[in-house]
Length: 600
Image (cartoon, rainbow, N blue to C red; front, side, top):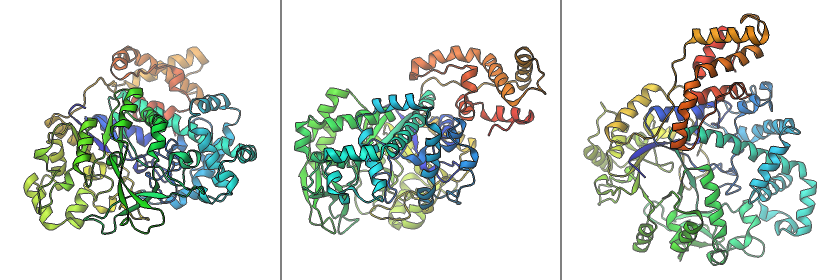
């Protein structure tokens, strides 16, 4: 990984309408912000279908996506929803926080309307998608349909016949719940279609997406239900042991996560097929994958099932390099970031070095005034990812003003030469950007200088986690330009071809539209219908951008994506997002408003 930088910003935290961030216009605008700021990476948290507790690290599937991230406006533009289906629904009234309770009650019902409207329209596309994703989709869709049918109870509490996947029970539920199974297939189709469009646009700007996958799966997941031999489970499918962390300075009783533990001997006998498949699928979604709790591949803390704390666990050896040699043999040289925070034995350090994957350095951990720190910047080598903080930490300002140790804070101020004039948060970011690590990342909360009201997660707690959203209007060009200046100063600006935004001439566009209206419809621009005007606009834009079409050839060679600009593309049902992807949204919105057309 070359010297570069980026921002951590989960999809849920985007300033989108309707209660939660999605793959809609705010996501495209954030990609534009990263581009303007010279950033190479956009890191997100896991995108999985979350369950109880709403943690992205506890999902119903290691492969499926979160339905909440499907953008409703895009569904409306595709003709699958009407505005009245969702604009007046209360998905949460606070623009800075997510109300997961309201989303749980309201969002699926709206997506069900879209599903009903899709029948007969997307059959071929859905069949193709199901065939392509047959590795995991069939089990997931059936799992979700049964889960609904049983009142959302954990699968270990289902009737024995279906809990144990008796063939006759599988056939029975596939027949009885056929429509709900198809609904969940549709949900995943829309999730993947929208995400891959966003990823393609982001990549076209020379920006790569860093994804995040937890090492373990949830106990109540399609993975555990469909692959019981892969885990240490008893005959009733309850775990015999669960995952956690031992007691340390932060927790006298350790952390009890409750995830089932892999049966690594079984996985070895299968040549680690599930893990190879998991990473292959993850690398379709992301350019780089960060694996949480990476040290667990060397050795992991195993706690007997039923314990109330993690005290009575023990260290057990993991698959070590055998797993990653098998992965490399099949997938080649893939990009992985090893989350290597916490207690590391010499054996773990050696294992991490042998993989060659970059580990993590969290700047907020660097300033323990009582002892030398492994996170202090002057000892970093290049092969590491430097974070100002992560989702599990307080924000920089929260740590400095509320939760940090006074001596540690003073150490940070002295080491980084922090001043209020520069901004304490900007001094921290400078420390990461100036470091020797190849990649430096900061949370958007830290870029904005927010306090602990914007903290993403308090580990080992349930409740007010994962709810922060960015306030509308604060992600500005001025902020991007300030970050660009620092990024350029420390040699981290991204490389690669980017199609720059054209300076469109409104008068020329109007003249072209008038010509097309007369030639194609025999009308002048003031008497043409809205549909006719939009078609004329598409033709006029194509005319103005013809030289940019040729310029995309260079972009294709750099990032393997080129845009083909056609009137049909521009005037497809997803007009708004098409214009955003071209960088023309604001100008065309203004032009259409002058003609009496509301683009929304």
